[in-house]
Image (cartoon, rainbow, N blue to C red; front, side, top):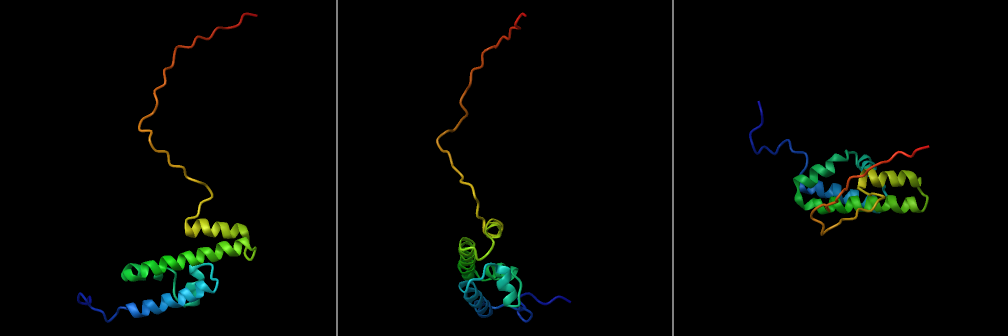
Length: 128
């Protein structure tokens, strides 16, 4: 039999427990952690729990974003200082933090393609 609606007895996370987890995660990030997975392992949880808690308790969305920015910055700085393999740092930043190594240029003002007039071209064979 399913639990009645509004049943909170089986709920593992409340706002106070979520705050404690995010506080511990921020300490680890500020101490140089370079991945959310590593932080989750250190805290004996899984990395998706941060997304779950940020969705469940809206107050933690900016905290999660700050956590990810600190982690990205740690990875970037450690890559610059050759504390981690530069190629792996770049890969991690692209794969996990949305970094790109190209610039996107946005063109505005052109609303239609220019018209091109093509005239008939005649090809003559050269006589030998």
